[in-house]
Length: 295
Image (cartoon, rainbow, N blue to C red):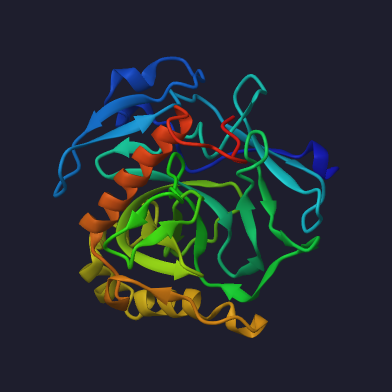
C-alpha cells in the first residue's frame, strides 16, 4: 500500500471514558483557540489548574504521508471525521490520577531524529533536518522518546532553579523506560517518575522519565527510588546518553542542572504543570507565538 494512503488507529489510549472524571471532558470533540481550564489535584503537589484545549476525542488515527526517511514524510493525526488535528495542541495532556498522554516520536532502538513540526499546520511528526539533510542520532536511543501534549517550554522564561536557562521553545520531552517498543505516533498512558534538567547550548530542555501503564513493572515504580530499584542504572544511562550524543559530531557535551541529578516525581509533576500553563498562554496568544503553529 502506498505510504500516502496508510492510515492506522492510534493504540494506547486516550479516551477510556471510565478514567476521565470530569464531565467537561466528555463533551463532543471540538477545537477552540481559547484555552479551557479544569481543576486537578495532584497527590503530593500543590493544587494546580491544568489547561486543556482538547475535549473528548472518541477516535484518533494516524495517517502517514510520503515515505519514511525522506524529506516529505509526515505523520498526521485525524479524528473520527477525517479532520486533521494537532498532536501537540489537541491531544489531552492529563487523564486524571497523575496519568498523562505521551506521544512517541522516536521508538526505542532507533536513530532517526523524529519530532513534532511545531511550525507546520497541525504539527505533524517529521524527521528533523539540518542544512537540507535528514538528521540521525549517532547511535540508537534505548528508550521510547517523545513529548507531552499541551506543554511548552517558554523561551522567554529564565528558570532560576536551573542556572537561569531559558526554555527551548518546544513541548516537554519524555523518556519512557518500559519494555515495549512503541511506534511513531503511538500514544501511551504514562505516569511520570523523575525529571532531568538538561541544558543544551544554554536552553533548558526537560526530560521527564516515565513508564507506560501497560508495562509489566508499572505497578512497581511510582517515584525515583523505585526506578533505581527495578531499573537499576537507568537514570544514569539516560543522563549520560543525552549528555554525550552530540560529541561524535564535534559538539560539546550537554550539561544538567539540579546538581547533575534526576529530580523526583513531585518535581516532575511541577515541571509538567508549569509548562502546561505556559502552553495555555501560548494558545490564548498571551505570549508571542512567532513561527509556532497554533492549529
